[in-house]
Amino acid sequence: MARFRRHQREAFDYITAGWDERDRLEFARLMLKYVSSLDQLKDRGLAADTKGS
Image 1 (tube, one colour):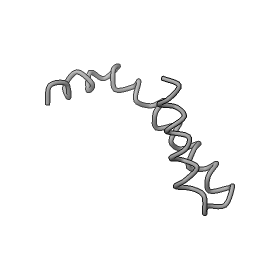
Image 2: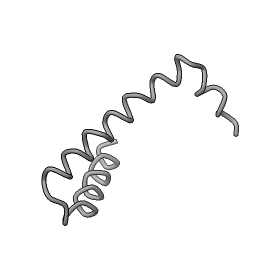
Image 3: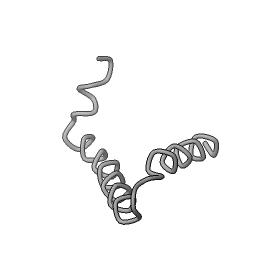
Image 4: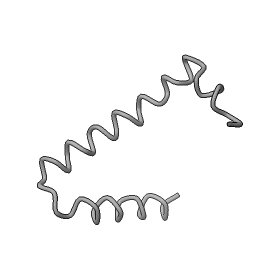
C-alpha cells in the first residue's frame, strides 16, 4: 500500500509540476471530495449495480 501511495504522490507531483499552488490545492481538494462521495454510492445501491459489468 505504501508503494501505491508513493506512486500516486509522484504522479501528482509530475503532472501538476507546472501548476501554481492554488490550482494544485484546488485539484487535490476536489479529488478528495469526489473520493469521499463514492461512499454515497453504497447507500443508493449503485455500487452493487456496477459489479460484474
